[in-house]
Structure formats: structure tokens, C-alpha cells
Image 1 (tube, one colour):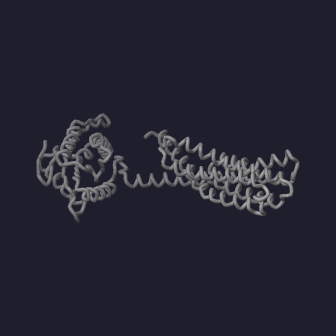
Image 2 (cartoon, rainbow, N blue to C red):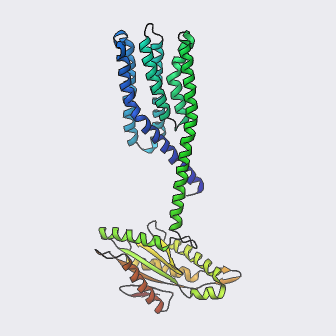
Image 3 (cartoon, helix red, strand yellow):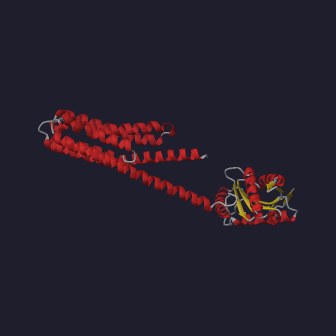
Length: 380
């Protein structure tokens, strides 16, 4: 995955995280929309005096709330292909919800002799507006639109009608205050999200470094042991084969003594790249075992197949030439191969012991070869 692809993926993941936060934050508000709507029309017997207005408001509010609840359930089960559409529906329904409350408040404020109901409606809408703005702070545009949709109808109504102009100015001031809170809260949210993201990146990098051999870039022995232990347990449960190959560069000390340790290090790196080119299944684990030794974990692979792969690597390394400071460096490599179905209550390092025995037999047999143990078959 390229750096651009990584950035794109992380940005997409962050956006999905924000949308998830918005939906989670707003879902509990739907319950309050329903409860508060009934309380608002029933307080001071408002419903008995304005039945048509109350029914229209309750029907619109309940309808959009149930639609949003249904959409939350459906969108969670739809494929990612419809993610953009689901997000648009979510945002649109949020604004519609706020607009219903805003229009209701504006209508109540125009009524004569309804001072108690007006104060109750004003308190309810102001409280819901403040709560909604806080809930939608992760998405600045939605939070501002929500605020305007809920408060602008009554502000415009107060200014146009000339009635309760003081209240209109107070509501307008409150709306501006909410916008300022959105900008501040949104910045704090994204700062926290960025810090969390950077901490996650650093944690992944620390994990990668702790599992990686600094010289070759392969996994290190610690990671190999952990991977082997996991695979040993899994294969034991599923009664599957596990193969391990242990490689050792022949006469590596001679390279260091003749050409220097830097040349030896470069040869190790070149050998690592060659092994990766041979063992390229996603499930294969290639690691530096220590010094000039390398090891490969092959889940679900029998000894014969593992031996063919080992011989392929041996053949390629035999013809591999490292050009270093005008010198051509070449040598061979030996391999010990073993395969086993993990038995109950056996240790995972037992298969490494068998691979080491096979490697010793390959060295004793003349090097530049692979040997299978416990059924010794020498391959040249």
C-alpha cells in the first residue's frame, strides 16, 4: 500500500469514525424529541386550545424521529456502496428535525395570549438546540445548520412581525453564541481525534519495530516465536500440518573476515530479499532467527512441499552475487525442514528443535542442500 493509499484509507476511516460518533450522539436525542414534544403541547393545556397545530407538530416530529430510528437500523445493515447516500439521508433528516421544532416555536410565538406556552416552547427549543449543537460538534457544518434551522424561523418571525423584538434579539444572540461554541468545540474534538490517531500510529510503529529485525527488515525471532505458538495451537485444534524451515548461510564467517562486516550485513539483507521472493504467501512468516540464520513458518504445508520451496531458495541463493566495492561475493545456504501435526500438550519449540537437527544433517552432508527430519531425505 502506497503512502497516498494509506492517507486515503486513514482519512476514510476517520470520516467513518466521525459519522459513527454523530449517529451515536444523536440517537439518544430522538427519545427526548418525542418526550419533550408531548410535554410541550400538553403543558398549560395548549393542545386543547390549538388542536390542529399540535397534531401537525406531533405528527411531523414523530414521523421524522421514527424515520431516523428506522434509518439507523437499516443503514447499519446496508453495504458500504450506499454509505454516501445513507450519510446524506442522515444529515438531511437532522436538519428537518430542527426545522420542525423551529417552525413550531415561530408559530407559537405569533399566538396571542399564550405567554406561558411561549415561554415553555422557548425553553424547550433552546435546550434541545444547545444539546443538539453539542451532539453534532464533530461535524461543524451540520452543527451550524442544525442551530440555524431550529432558531432562525423564530428570529425572522420576531423581526418581520415586530412582536417581541427583544426576545428575537436574545434568541439571535444565543444562536451566535452556539455558533461560537461549535467552532471551539469542533476544534477541540478534532485535536483530540488527531492526538488519538497519532498515538495509534506511534503504537503501531512501536509494535512493528519490536517485531522487526533492524538489519534485514524481516520479522525477528521474538515475532516468529509468537507466530509459531499461535499457529501451533490453531493447527493442533484443526489437526493441520505445520512446516518450519531453518536456513543457515554457509561459510558466512569467511565473508565477514574477507570483505568486512558491512559486506556481511549487505549479504544478509540480499538473502532476506531473496527468501521473501520465494516464500510469498500471506500466511508465510519469514524471520531472521539470529546471526546468519533465517527461519520460515509455513502453515498448512507438508514436508515435501516445504522442501521444494527450500530447494528453490537454495538454488537462487547459490547463483546470487553481491557486488560490493568492486568485489563479487557469493556463497551457498543450507536448510533444515520439518513438518508436524501438533499433538496435544506438546510445545511449539519442539518443531524448531527438529528443524535444527535437520539443518545440522544438511551441514554435515556437505552444505548447499536441504534435509527433512524426522524422516531424513537429503536433497541436492
